[in-house]
Length: 333
View 1 (cartoon, helix red, strand yellow):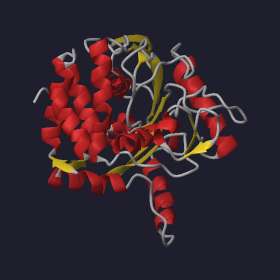
View 2: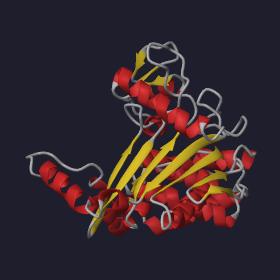
View 3: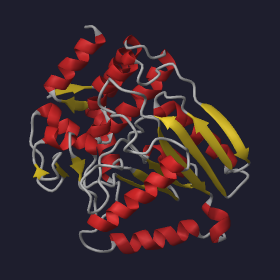
């Protein structure tokens, strides 16, 4: 493993993207998102994505110069068109608009179309929770999960993120893929030449597999089996149908440089909890959290990220030697 500081990694990633036909300000936004994922221990959405991002920017599959455009539908609803560019600039625009809209309306929502891989879903709502708002993020992606009882992938792993504000404490954050594991974890295993546990995925014939490359060519197991598959369908509708974006079976791969733009969708919802709760939301949430933490062995979701961030800021992050070497080649060093 090769240890690098967060700033060194950010600079390396931004330089690679610029070298592969991405505008400097876009490269910076994308690099910061990938480094934030790496710092949180979400390696499937971190530096491992750089080779595919760079390849797609160079081929034109993702437009590294695209400027997202906001269309305001009302004081509490808007649509952002990512124009087949990276998702992170579009998501940043959506977050900024939501933050302002929620000052005047207790509920606001933004749909994002013609987008790309959106990384750690909770990162798109955590900052809103730090400002006092409840927030939910939904997104779809290229086919990875079959409908329950089927054997052909139709839906993405369809991540969702949720964040709730806490008084004087970091927000409560929930981040999850609706497959048993994020597909990025399987990609990391493939890059490292490691096997994956049985039960994570199926090969192209529908048989369980521990080969990560066979899994990448096959389908993912949904979390919660049949119930999880229905939740995947719900997110697919909210992220893709609502934004008139590509469904998973229509979207091209996030990992390959060839093919058309994926054109997937995302959806962000923000809620001001104060008016709905008569100002009691914070106290009621702490009552619930107290009950959770009062049980031996129970812990709140998302808390490990805080320790991971602190360690990453202090010590840097460890990258597989092969990945680090590949990044250096991509950077031209």
